[in-house]
Image 1 (spheres, rainbow, N blue to C red):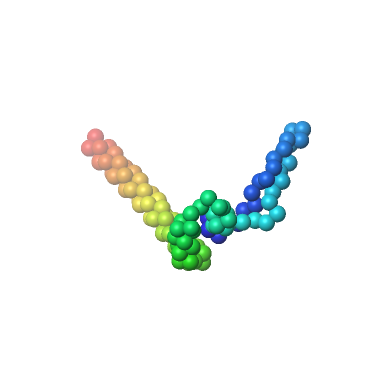
Image 2 (cartoon, rainbow, N blue to C red; image 1 turned 90 degrees about the horizontal axis):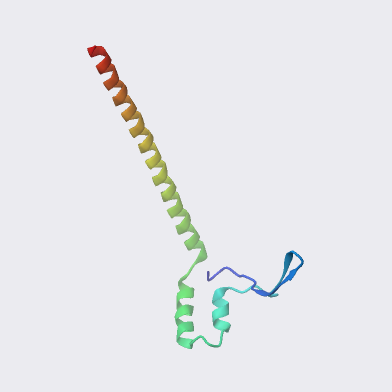
Length: 104
């Protein structure tokens, strides 16, 4: 949430069956809002500033994409394994049935 700027709703009024919202003129990130807030202690702001300098949105996106790719591969392998298992069970059952029929 450090990097996503959002315009906060200032006013929301109902006009007949619809709502009309009034937003801030300039969008701000939650990170910016914390630094503007007077009740937040300076030590907290310093810790947040140090953490913020370490973050790189491009690297974070690449890591997320890599992990999503791994998850999709794992789910694909699981699906293939399940299909193989089902086909093996059906083959076993058909062989079992054939064996029972040939004994009669």
